[in-house]
Length: 115
Image 1: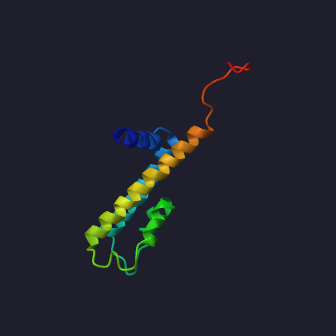
Image 2: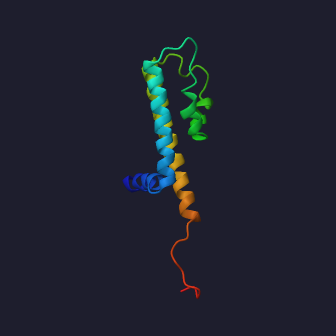
Image 3: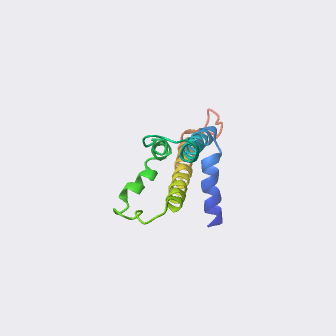
């Protein structure tokens, strides 16, 4: 099991495109946290939607939760659930990008004769 986790993290971080994606998601999540804790708004802020949309389609699974699932949850537990979901979805998407890049990259330099 530990080897599978290591392979998933390797896929998610061994190329520049996956690392750039993770950095963008981390920056958007950081902005969301800053906006949540340090900025007062007269109206609701949409900063929480940006990390959620950046990590789609996996983060969209939150919409499948039955109605009222999170009603009794305090704001701290809801925030933790939101951040864990964003993190899991971001790593899964970055691993998918890494896997796709491995598939389209040439495996090694080949000679004309195929040897």
